[in-house]
Length: 146
Image (cartoon, rainbow, N blue to C red; front, side, top):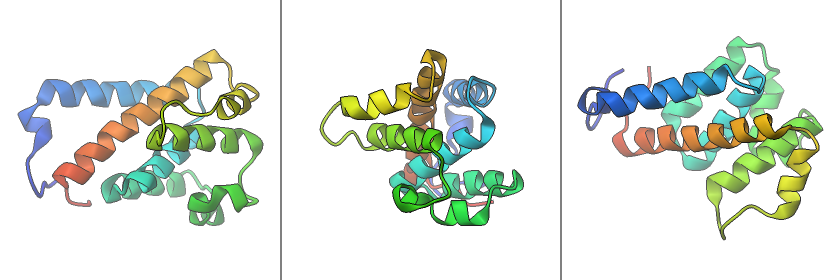
């Protein structure tokens, strides 16, 4: 990984390692890997992180996710390629990624509870928090795309 601004993994190695370890825990957690990657990609799109968009889009293509699903991810509400569980996860992810006026709406949380148990909700919420941290590193410090 080449860096445009500062090489943060070498400058703050303990924090980088902790963030990386937390990300691995999410991938090994209560949610299916493709859903985690979809959430990571959508939040990265919202935050404008090209590095993370490239990484998670590549992972989804390697997992044989339908290209039409990836192409319509920014418009998932109107796309027929997303099921109710994915829609609930993406609505939650967007609500947390933007936090326009505080806590996400109760309706968004209630829709989430129809598809996820407590461990799934906690994992999904942690996933959004982690990718948001990675996005801020990517946007702010601009590592070069591989």
